[in-house]
Structures are given as structure tokens and as C-alpha cells.
Image 1: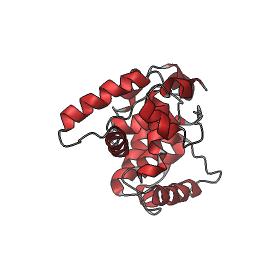
Image 2 (image 1 turned 90 degrees about the vertical axis):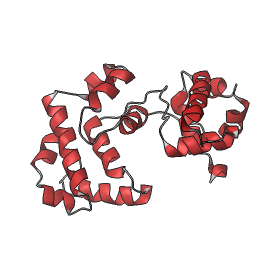
Image 3 (image 1 turned 45 degrees about the vertical axis):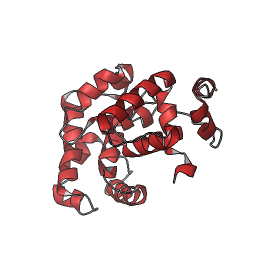
Image 4 (image 1 turned 120 degrees about the horizontal axis):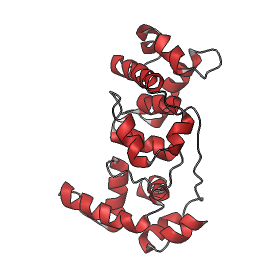
Length: 199
């Protein structure tokens, strides 16, 4: 795989890649729903997020609600599955934005990473990190570096034996190193997240 060949030029990263199965990125559908899932997951453990998201989907007959159906769902009903009031509002903000801006999967797939970040962070409740996760996991973009992800920062510091105390200096080092990984920075992040020895 081309990304493994390229990333393995970094000896440190090569070590953790060799411990894992190769990753394949998937281009998803229903991006508004992927964004809703990301909002549900914010500040929750993976297991709890999956339970709440499952309950959310169960509110709808085919477990695949349209943006309009989510907007039409009373906030109390959304909150009944374990969503906070803020998150329930954010889900509806996402769906309104997609309808008002006439955003489709096809349109998003044609846009650049930067344009998507600029567009989707206009939605209240959607920050840069959330959009980066959408770029990686729903749009299948290969060169996204989740600089502000805490686990990425911790694993990066561990792998390269760096001190995180001076955040500014640390982020500069992250940026410099990640440039060497381009155009496959998404895969590098996936291997850092999947690095079991770092637990």
C-alpha cells in the first residue's frame, strides 16, 4: 500500500505501523448524519456514544432519518435518548444548515478540505476537530492532520519523546513532523490512535 511505503520512511512511525493491520479509508454517504454522530460522540467514551447514537437512530422507523425528520423531532424526544439540551439543538442546527445551504454528499466530495472546514464550522456546535473527523471518516480524505486531538498529541509526544509543557513549541514540532507524512497524514493519525502499546 502506497501510504505504508511513504509513512515507513519515518522509522519511529514504521515501528507502530508494523504492529497494526493496514487501514483503508471509506467514502461515506449521508454526511449530515455522520456530523450528527460526531456531535453525539463529543466528550463521551466510545461505548456510551454508541449506545446514545443507537437510541437516537431507534427514534426513526428505518434508523436512517432525513435532515427534515430530525428538525421535526421535538427537542424533548431527542433529549429522551440521553442527549443534552445543547447537543439536541446542535443536531437540528446541522440539519437546518444542510437544507438551507443545499449541501449534498456530492457537493461536499467536490470541495477542498479547507473549504469544508470553513463551511461546516459556521454551524453552532461544530468545531474544527469535528469537521476533521468528518473529513477523515466520512469523506475519506487522506491528508488530514488532527493537530488538536488530545490522544494524537499524547501519542506523538510518547513516540518522539517530546515534552508537551510548552504547547506552542510542541505544536510547531508536530506540524514540522507531519509535513513529512503528507499526503497521507490521515493514515498517520489512524496508526497513532491504533497504537495499543501506548495505552
